Image (cartoon, rainbow over all chains, first blue to last red; front, side):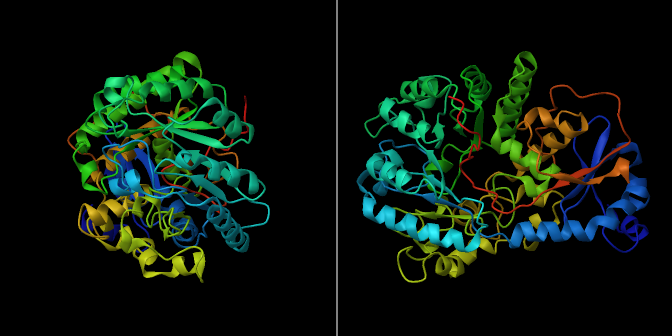
Length: 460
Length: 49
């Protein structure tokens, strides 16, 4: 947009035009409030320089700015990632946890885990409404390497937390599945390929054995359970197979999956990092396939990481994941507890000692960690303040994740994350879906049940 | 016009040719208290099994 056009628009919030690659529509955004509109692209100049849309938006801009500010800076933690062990029975290429910890690390003793959950319960009670429970996700390394402690804790604190478990699936025997499903624990698995040869490229035991069939067996047993998901980490190794991945997931009645870009925090992951353009091409082919499958069967496979981008556009405060916003959720919406009792903004930082905010069971506990310099380094990372994000029209639909990557891979918190161009394409794709009236096909049924419409230009 | 597209520019599966409305602009809002995790999506549904 030219300076002349901005001048004609007068004082106050203004629009930035964005080419989304649609036949009919272009977008205009005000990135300061995460506002967007789709306009006939033959009329974009008129919409930017004045008229009913700009007038309607300006009447609401202050309230949108307040909403976004509250979302970005005023949340209190409501979730914790619990790492009950440093150990993992797999040696995945891209893991963000150091290999020495995963191979020779320690378990958190059961009594320490229980003491930790007690302290966390007290903390969350002090900051959350009484009617809501905090979320506690057992995470890894592989949490089921310390199964007895984990299961004991789930039973001891069943009234205090909503529990989830992210596992590689290899230790999910029938007894473990019965324990977890009977207690309504949300279960996340990991699988990287539609067949063993692809999964094995990145996810194997320390001895090099395949775990593909074990994960498939766990998926088969979870079929029909209401609360499970599967994560695929997208790398150079499996990118050509993402469409087959979603076909496998849909056939297996996986309710929700994630097709996450590999996190490039540690050097091992960077060796399998796909180029942004390749990632976009394969990812959108897979997304298109999920839509075809939905049209063919009437059953959705939700790709949660993309659904979150879409929801972040349609209803910023309704998003479920807090990677795609700046500051991200690490250290403010949630935090992570390492097996040694250390507190980190997110599990992604556990291999990086400089981000240790202190020990949970030490004096000060969570509050001290939240106020620590280690956490503040992450929680003050603000895309408004550094280039090129500060001038980006979609910066609050993206958030430039992930700060761990930005710091370790790109050289600082005021750097972009690892997949800037891919994020732009995701937002364009999402806006095209909205333009075509298809957005709800990619979202959980009833996703907006607790929302109210606060802007609808047709009604203004 | 800001280009947020890279060289790769895949289209959606089926792009309509006629515009249903000259402008589409919708925003929804809700209480954000307690939202959000990162690596893990918590499925809140009750067990169907």
